[in-house]
Image (spheres, rainbow, N blue to C red):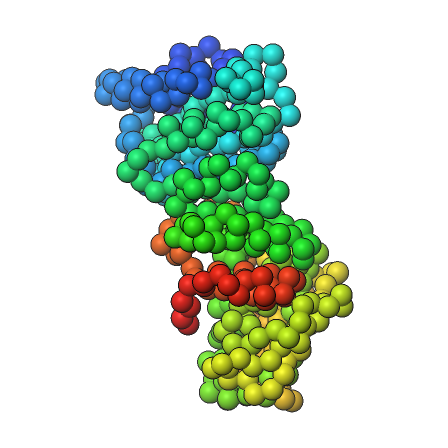
Length: 414
């Protein structure tokens, strides 16, 4: 078998069955099964032996162990785990991490190990590597996968803490915190950054549930924990293009006559519409006078410092035939007799920007790959107070602003 083979794209447990020694399996990206209580010892041994083998004449790989984050990733079901592992293979090429997968599985099989509280556990380790310019394989990071049908195991928090490297920050990535709030409570305090993905939520109500859970987990006693939403990062092109509509002085002057904001979204894009509406409300200092009505409308009034002079109607609506890659189809701001808008082109290949004060133009638009979003969430740009504001205001459209008024919000600037 070729020493340069890459097992990461193959069947997940392939490394346990092929006739390889543990070091060869590890350096080629295959999973190596280990006892949960010996994960750290086995990793140290594998790294040491891999380094010794790499120094041998003719070795096709190099060991360059690096780590910028502890990254805890929760997955549920085999499809979600395999997808996340493929993303991690790309993420760790630019952001080396010690990745700890917490995987909820339906069945561990007959060989499952039983924890001291009677909960089945299975653990495996594997290496992440990247190709050097010369074609040589550089092993840079490691993955630890802990599989269990019950993440409520009393053993799990202690096991996780023992596996966190002490000199780097920890990020916790959970797609839907509202669904997993119960088991999150004992481990959420170990995270320096909490990452979730509003783009995976369905329906308006899901954003409200997530906002409540985040306030419960991190709102007061753990207020220093950073929160980042991958769904918010997907909306970056929309925010940039909408801001560009106000490059002309006449556009900004017309804000005083703003009377309506329309956000049209595609199937499943309700949360994206709420986040974008929350961002616009925050930037224009608009205050809601009630919650979102069943027809998707809400009444807004100018707050302190707002350039708007009168009441504004917010209108959120579904476009059944929409093709927007981020869940949005069109955003329009009606100012007096003028309309400024950004809308997905009929062929879905770009965004058409329209304004009476600028020539119409089309900007390319593509959906950002998940790996790119994960890298951004782990970078300096992952600390975005505008996201806090948009999440709070978007959720308040559903729940009422009273639920958030006592929470101290971070200072937000343009």
